[in-house]
Length: 235
View 1 (tube, rainbow, N blue to C red):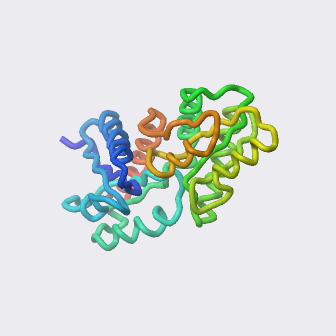
View 2 (cartoon, rainbow, N blue to C red):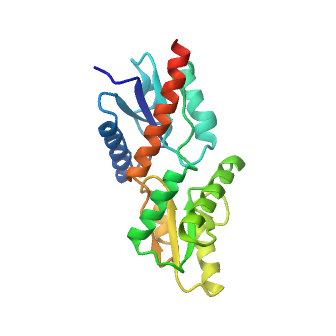
């Protein structure tokens, strides 16, 4: 017996099998937290199953974008793909993106600690990057929240699209006399972008957030909030 509407977890998509496996790990952990609720995974780009494939056969579902900022894919692409699949917003509400969220910031700090961060390290929060000003503003919010977690101002860098790029930022900090630099990954999964962080020349590079318990908690919180919205629409 279902414990509620299906949860459709939508990620960007990557050719990297480790990224695909990471999204699957998040979905598995969400299933364990929401026993009885169907959890499906779909992608807006690069690989299958597509968003249309994922919602096929469902009367309704809560759609949770597995993105750390609400850029183009969350605000434009995903709703358009749902509409093209005949998934009306009244029956397939889309939750806010996962970030910025104190839960994800806590996960980022935990990954930093696991990687060897020390108090006193210069900290860089490294995100994928976007041409969307609102998405970049959300990354800056995450940076301020992480600064409160680590006790010092956090620099922001990007793997692509936006500036400063992480490698240039690290080089500049090094030239300015930074003894140790720690990069916190504001990425959900491994892949090309995280490889760029690893190659940026920092002393410490945290792993992607992955299926950290706080990431799972954020997904579940988004689902539960939008499930209430769906119940009101169905009443």
